[in-house]
Length: 477
Ligand code: GLN
Image 1 (cartoon, protein in one colour):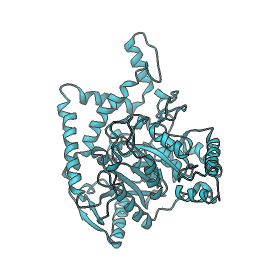
Image 2: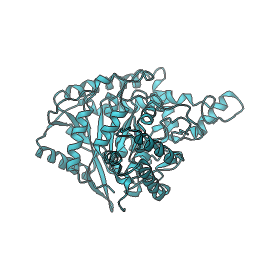
Image 3: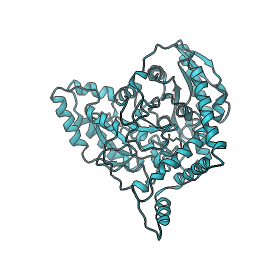
Image 4: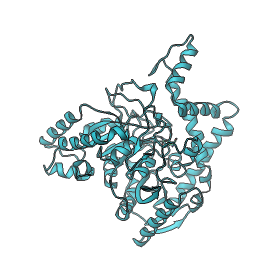
């Protein structure tokens, strides 16, 4: 690819705009050119907004008036489950295909105030249920590195948009890995903030006790910049936490690795990349110690039981009466059955049924109750371990991006979340940073390393991420 302004990181672009070398209109046009070239085949954007250039002009006018924010005039992509007033927000579901948001999510309001240009809304797994963007009602998003493969999910459209330079950065949401998984598969940085650090107001609920909005970016510095812009307590989200929980601590230069979790099911190339990265970090003075988290063996089960339970409850609002698709049957019950049967895809229906089951009288104690207990135990174990190390390191995903259609069995898709779900169960912040490229068939594919830090310690993630960046061998496209 010829050098394009769309290849700049947010931080670089901001500097150039501030120096008067380029404008937001230049940047936005450069992204629109890349979109024109690649979106038809990648299917990263479901819609490209018609007012992007106009917004870029407005941002340039603000700069001309003396404003100088780092995000002023930066073109970003937004996942399709985050509300932008007056825009369709479909969560990649037939249920909400024609639903127009009536207000801005708090994160959108913040970005609008900062002068961000929204390029469009990006594809995802329906209602953020999945791990590959294959569950979208509007077609799969392809991996920009190898179009036979998935971009990951559920924020696959956002990750692909950033990796293919169709945006300088993007917002995704992470319930059990949905920012980190596609970041790993596409070779970009993905951050899942501490639960409560970023407002969920205006993010469509999947699993309310796990969901967080997070940035997908080309660099760790850009992830930090966006996190700083997004975070903060919100009176409209009672689960958002006071900003003072976010504190910069000094690094101990000590990383914990739960080797017992890596024993099986991890691709040999990913394992080698992980070991090489840790060895490089040791050369830079980091101590790598083995840690044991016995309850990690329950993490996937606890995650999915809780996920199904909350999804079944959160999706009950789509009843064909109040929101979205509305189909008429010959009774009220038939209206519900028809609307929900036609509006939801297979994965949403599966989770609604399983969630209703685990919450039902007689099964609640055996499933939901036990999952809740395992979650509390894991949270306690993790915070004890994080008292002596800066972060826990694992590969982000057990394999590089897989071939479209390869994981048609839902269970095989669920087990791929083994490393990411823990941070959502426990509320800890986690980041995925590209570490190395591994061979898969004829392709060379990027894979990410994940760090999980103590609550509120995103700064450790940025510091560790910067170290990985300095030794990473992943090339940008
Ligand atoms: N793959 C996980 C799931 O299917 C995570 C999804 C997400 O983070 N939204 O639930």
